[in-house]
Image 1 (cartoon, helix red, strand yellow):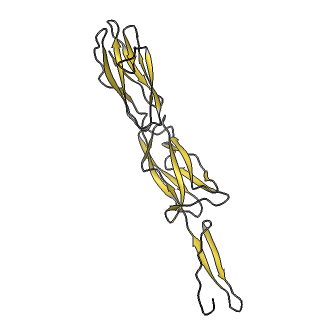
Image 2 (cartoon, one colour):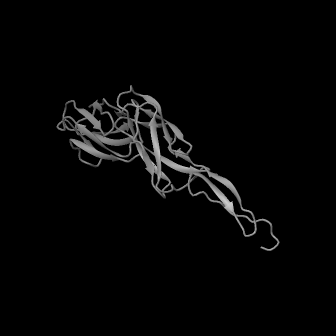
Image 3 (spheres, helix red, strand yellow):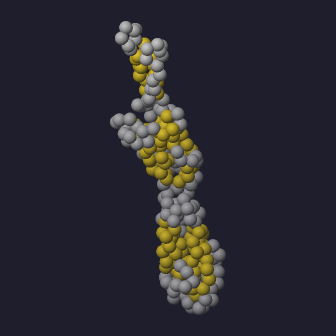
Length: 238
């Protein structure tokens, strides 16, 4: 406007890099300055991440600027993932944060040959971006414990027992509990249900304890076994 000698304008970064910003007006010499935008990668999972050979884990990699999520420019951001010890940790690489998105995911798995437990580092890098790294621990496959066994159950009677999964963040599993000889003892999901040779119980992610019942049928000894994908079996006698 007439009489003004300055004006304000907002510069917004479209992608990571540098650009020259130029101002010009009739009858004035132009002016320019170099504007630089920065960005960073953030592996959002809490460090350390824990997995086992049969229970891999998924991590999320986020594109950020000044600590806030930003959408990836075209044609997307290629992210290189590297393991500090490939015998301990295997990673897919590269992964891509697609155009317009702020995150991508990657599944981490056991490297296959390192003695367990082992701990190493996952690093995420990309050209022009600040890298990020987290610690990753690979434990042996978690176990299943049949609490309270061995135990005696009277013929015609039933008792409640619990089974404990060593890890609760299993993604959701089906727990299979079986009697080696249902003519001697059966298993049941509740006190109101007739026992059978086996039961399958859906265990939601975040849950580690399951209650079940053993019902005595005739005199004898049986093995009760519990199994679930990603866990080592547990057993006890009745």
